[in-house]
Image 1: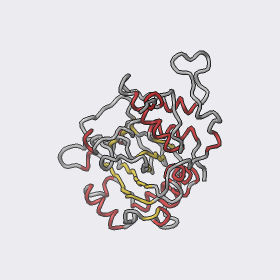
Image 2: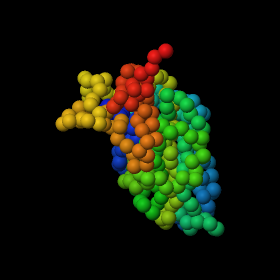
Image 3: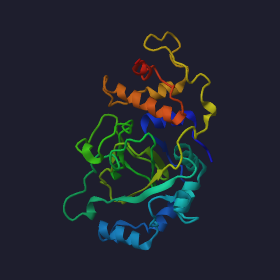
Amino acid sequence: MTLLNSRQMATFSARGFLRFDGVVPEEVNQQFLAELGDVTEGDVASPEAHYASIMQRGSVPVVPAGISLANAYPAESAVSRLLALPVVAGAVASLVGSKPVLDHHFLHITFPPSYYKRDAPVAQHTHQDSTIDPRRAFDIQLMYFPHEVTVEMGGTRFIPGSHLRRVSEASIGRYQNILGQQHVVCPAGTLLIMHMGIWHGGGANRSDQLRYMFKIRLCPTEKQVRLWDLSDLPDDHLQQRPIFWVGHERTRDPIHSILTEPEPWFEFDTGRLEYINRIKFWRYLLGNESFDADYWLTRLENDFE
């Protein structure tokens, strides 16, 4: 397997996702669609009938929550082959360890306007999955797109860097457009790996084709500390760099820069709270409470009883 490197882990910490375009071979994509019984528009009576047909066929297995990922999918199935890809297996191991369990999975299907007898489909509300989650530990969600997703197909909408702002599930539903949000437009076989807290929602499908996205949520069974390939972690990673008045040597450790790179939606004042959240998150991953970037946490911890 190919473990994530430190820059990738820092990017996940800061932005809440990693994207792997076209990483799944077309053979596996076609197998996945064939196992579902992918159909053309005229072969589906209604969205409800299509979902019922797929569930009755059993191509997506019914699995209990908490089952080991290693035992969740039949050998040689498309999903099993996807998870065995070195880049996928390595990313999963780097983020949630070598023995994660499955929380749940779901096949998301968005249908074209012609499938609806009355109102045209609308975009899903912005939300954060599950409920308020105060843990330092985290789950990940794999979002697999087995076919090309065009602009018209309304790919998943998400807000980079939103994962560490804890909210109560759908309380953010009134926010439909946020500066810096992304919409998934991608080639077949693209995989997004997201922190469970990232704000997201499904787009409205304005095309004449069905859009599929298969989601798997995974939970760790071990502490998520130093699980990735640390060979590129700089020797001076725990040292502080000059801030504000920086001279000619601003960037020695690129990971510090990744953790303090703002998103477009960050406000100048409260956006700085996200740097603090990221540093706390990186401390957890690194297993070292002394780490800091640009002194954001150290200056707050300089207190005496």
